[in-house]
Length: 479
RNA sequence: CGGGGCGUAGCGCAGCAUGGCUAGCGCGCCACGCUUGGGACGUGGAGGUCGCCGGUUCGAAUCCGGCCGCCCCGACCA
Image 1 (cartoon, rainbow, N blue to C red):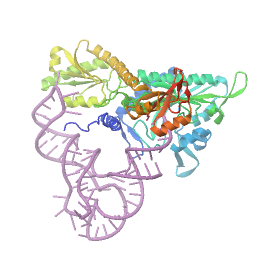
Image 2: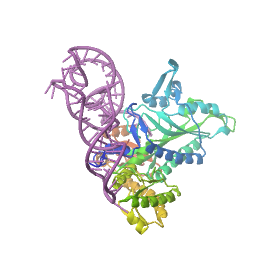
Image 3: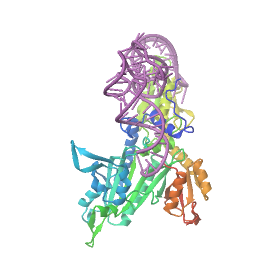
Image 4: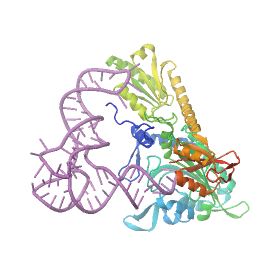
């Protein structure tokens, strides 16, 4: 009776569990009045803000500068790169009327900004001295989706898109891989989400790119999540938008470009990597609430005493840059515990009459079962140490899960059995033929997530057709 | 775009095949009391143009017609 809207257990229905966690933690809700759209609520947006701050710092540290380009893109721009328009046209929102009048040229609501940025790069870049051009944009984009899932796929989403131009392919490729490393480092060290860095197959690459690279994570249901992409655009957009520069030798050449992005989808990945049946679990580096302190009392005198100590401890913790809430609402303690667990507070501290006597407090980490009693004297240090420990433990646990879910498969039957059963990553040989890849997808809904970078080269036979192969790729169901 | 479902209080639903008086229930919300070391309880209370438009009828949440919207399942995607 006490429980309001229970969270569906993961084992029973994973997608339902996912929605429940988002609702229980008050991260977001479907907009309902707009098809496929969502409202990111303060608890969810706070996570995005931390993601932004961390990434933005890393982008700046690698020499990039932020800029902002228009939301609307002339439809003709999209059409300048053949593969690009073909890839995106099914999911475009198009503006046909402005100010009550039919537009002379229709505007596309950006699904991504390569084209409009290409247009401006052409104006901004004249000589090799203007290169490299290193730009990032924080923006919203719209892709008209049939199938929506909160954070993972909505018709409008928030993201960051880096766009750079270089004098040589060597340089642009280096940039592409550098940003992939930035993403991977961020995913693991901030989100505590282990990822595989890899190269996309030609079927899976970005429309208009020469080669796409990605980081892939494994969610708790064994599905893969593409958490970030970095594209080597070659000279495709340079040629489409006539982005030329004069070389040192005085010759005119097209620039070599890259683009790379991560989106609010990361929040979905965060949820599906760490959370449990009790609700959200968030690594301290991204958590909205680090510590919640609940005073325990039986009468007004105890209330005053425990609340006073709770406030003092809260102040000490806040001084160490932790986000702390003293929950002194007139509710039963148990109800508060469940609420903060749902919302993903990293730790809970209880301070009751017995603690005042012993000059200690009760400490419970969100990701661990046990509750421990900590002397008030070293209390702050203990909490700080536990935040670090939790950050590390979450990554270790997620990595162990990912590794256990990654299996070498040398036969088609073996791979199929894994994909139809527990899922996870199937590491298997592939001949490199897109037809084989398509066949696999047709039969099992499984796709090649990536060809891991630094892949060991070994002789083998394609798991589908038996033709010779030099390396293994990762197969998985994906979002 | 094909298949299915739904629209009644903030949320979840009942009521509707057989029209009828003042439209119910659970949770949540507000007030007061009592409680507070893992989801308490009592009493009182607020809250609805029944998705929209039209029709049938003395009378429509309920029957008929149209429209709109959203969700879920399939082909595409960060």
